[in-house]
Image 1 (cartoon, rainbow, N blue to C red):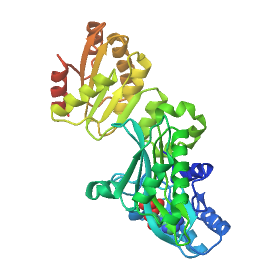
Image 2: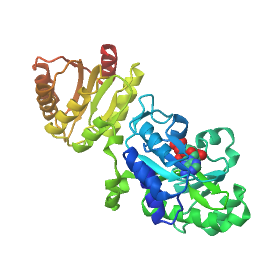
Image 3: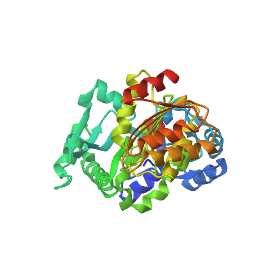
Image 4: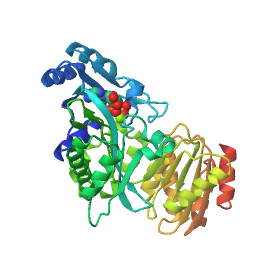
Length: 385
Ligand code: ADP
Ligand code: MG
């Protein structure tokens, strides 16, 4: 689960990770009030969307007066912000963060991620802050200093010193930097994060270190331990079809292709996607209805696939075990009664009651083609799409 920059900064504050003073606003007038409360004469207005690269896309602007805060907020709120992370369709901006503008001396990068190869959290720091870290990693990897943390012993003081010295920080900032990194790591651990990233972490002209940007991703599998975090989720940032699927307990991920796929079991779903690609087509989604799906869940899954306008053909690939093939067929027919099925459907059913399932679908009068095996099904569906 991802959260907005302003929410991430509120969590930073709880862990004594310094942030610029600021507040969130949903209207230009609110933005004005936040700025007025901050005092000072330079402010930054920042679009709140779940994507980076906002600065380059025109979603981060500096204002030199209160009235400019109002006009910038007016321009940014409601804009469709396109960045390299949003995709070409962009994201609608519904909130802005208004902050005091800082006098920046140095921009650094600081991030904590899980390194799956080492099976440990890794802290990364770089003097090349403010730019895309992926670029830095590709072109000048020596500029990224890394420290893996052994979870059994925790982050050690020598490691924060290695990081601070490694990026060439002024030695006078050593204690500040060590405290900063330690507190950020505490937060990463406390909330079971999979990513915490500050780009840039700035050193101001008066020698303070602050998190200017904040990106936090929580491990969904650990969210049950942090129920208070659930209210930070912003449904506007989720794909509407994925949101709908979550409500019905379906494991659905939207993709860019044209073949809708309904499969039971994550392994079979991945194999099906491979075969669709092998047959020269692209899947429009990943959908695992689960081993023990009910007719109702099947109906909802089918409806969700059909409501994606990119879908040109559907492949139903079910191995009947706990989910019997006749139950699957009933679910599909139930859904077909309620929605208009205007694309061809290829069905591959095997396992418990597969004959009954195939007959139910075959005699339904709908546009179903029964395939012999998985590869045959993939070729047929690719040809139809
Ligand atoms: P993004 O990474 O999405 O582009 P950032 O929060 O990193 O957004 O902001 C982009 C740039 O805007 C920063 O690298 C920094 O130079 C500038 N900036 C952001 N917030 C402030 C601030 N409070 N004071 C001064 N400059 C800022
Ligand atoms: Mg940034």
